[in-house]
Length: 173
Image (cartoon, rainbow, N blue to C red):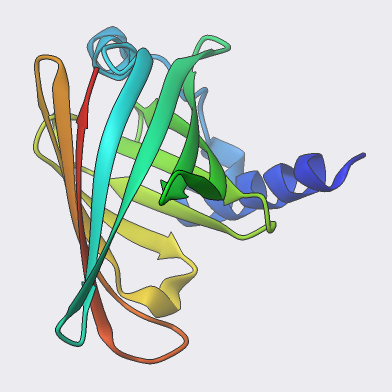
């Protein structure tokens, strides 16, 4: 197994523990309307990110591509760049657990860091997300989808500095 496969396996194990009892965890895809919402993200998006903390802000660009991954997931690949130079690459896996009424996103980066987010919102559009692993971040996000555009507003506590951080992401196809 390579490092990415091991990291994904660990993330999926954390997801199983965080979202539901492993013995009763159903397939992630059984709700057609939620999967249609996820599939609306298919394609390539150009995004602008702005991070704010302690009165300072930093901007970056992002290219993100979403495609179906099996029958119950969407896979996103994002490259974040500053001044035209890539600084981060992330893979994300998006799904919906109809039995428990939870959306879930697992994000992994090239440094083998990962996080698991869930939302119990009825709709993907306007959904409110909480980071469930690692729990020390106290992170919250809201996702809004409007035609060929989506936005994500987030806030969290930096595990390194303990300071509040916020970000906004605006993406268009």
